[in-house]
Image 1 (cartoon, rainbow, N blue to C red):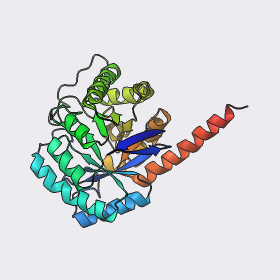
Image 2: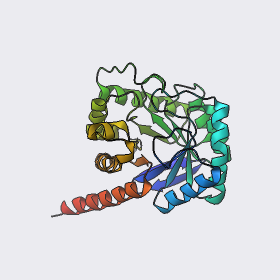
Image 3: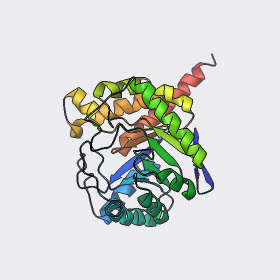
Image 4: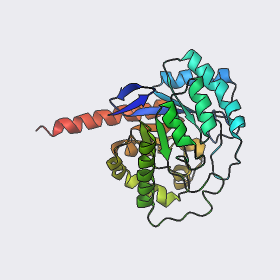
Length: 283
């Protein structure tokens, strides 16, 4: 279904994959994902891999609306011990570093990570894209309105689907010109979008397939789910599975989630559905 070029090695994925979220932050909104010791996070990583995760995304910077930014060094101090420990115990696991700092990206890759996941697509650190190119690792470009501190304060688009599409199209061109070999895209659900705009993006998600890059979708327990259902993040697992299923049917290549087992089940069932739909065309 898609390939990733990692330090000169090509890895092929035949079906969509699950990316498990490991937060080294003190304010995760999901119970059980609050900052833990490196050894506890190794245990969490092992469970996620056992439940079907192909990638583990490790982050040390809170990016929820209104969050306060920490320095690159503070972020590195949070994530590097965890990356080193997980890489030691699970050397074959694909680790992603969730950062918008080029310094953290470089140190994380040196510590054992293999993918850079940047919510700003290089807009918060002008050295990021060239750094990723030099590291020869895949780069996930996400659309975000302004910054995490202000992204929900002034939400304005001519058309959210068209605007996000054009942004990602331009970033793909920029990354390609810089020599990044594997580019992935993320429409950025919840990052500077209203609930209605998030659902508009989801409804038109298949339009992003024309960009011909693997697409990561991060819907896990986000406010578009629990505010619509009038509950909270702790009760948003079923809603997450519903929207993840829609995303898979519309072409998502990677589901970024807190709950790996349920996401892996969604991938398995959608794959079976697609296979059956394909077979039906032969009659």
